[in-house]
Length: 177
Image 1: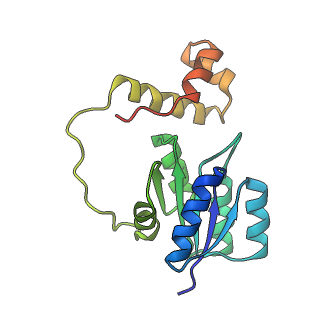
Image 2 (image 1 turned 90 degrees about the horizontal axis):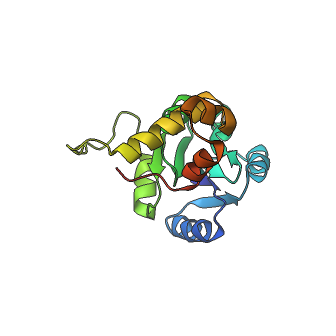
């Protein structure tokens, strides 16, 4: 099996570590640090796997999913993010991503998520406790932000909060539960 993998990651240290680990497992990794360089790589070659960091500075890697699927309908695409939310997970899957995984994740977790077949997810016991109020707030903010196409000012107006307050909340990592 051909193991050509596109890694789109703007963190050079993480990219170097994951590239080395994937190379040791037989993957031929092409790394891009930005959306533009990723598009250039996709024009030059076809990939069987893709690991896409969701947030690339002020851009998102979601627009790469349809491009990759158009080039190779059998590609397995994993969205990897430190800013996970239900809204972005749903959008990524709707666009054709195979799976979605929150950082931090090690190589084994990343490969398990990447190679998982659709509908074959490992059964995990869901926690019995509900999400915290802070996590619910984070999810709601992400949903409204998505509905406003990332427009922070309009999102702040709809949430009835000051724009700078919203910006501060968005700069923080999501609450675990």
